[in-house]
Length: 145
Image (tube, rainbow, N blue to C red):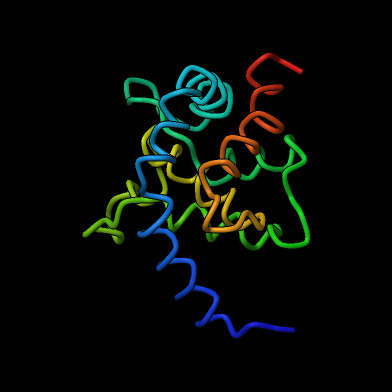
């Protein structure tokens, strides 16, 4: 069954606010804070100009999901971009500034939750899904495998 894009996006945004931003998911993020920091460190900063705080670009974000073999029939290449945009804070200036393309660590943590949701984790058990996703896909990257 093909779900219209607007229904899919509305369902995601509803689940995002209700479940991704929950205390249970927050506890998982705290538990794996060091792992997430290491993954962020490895996949960010290559396009950051000298003298500027490191950020993760969209290309680096894509590379992370491809190299971790996280793409599934539910979480395709197109949805990687959607996860990036959903996790980013809204910026008032997108014409003259590039901040809307520069993901910081807090936004990266949010993107991990969005990616777990888009990979087909049920919204009801999202904290368990996020933890399983981090353990299975991101811990090996943090350890250098």
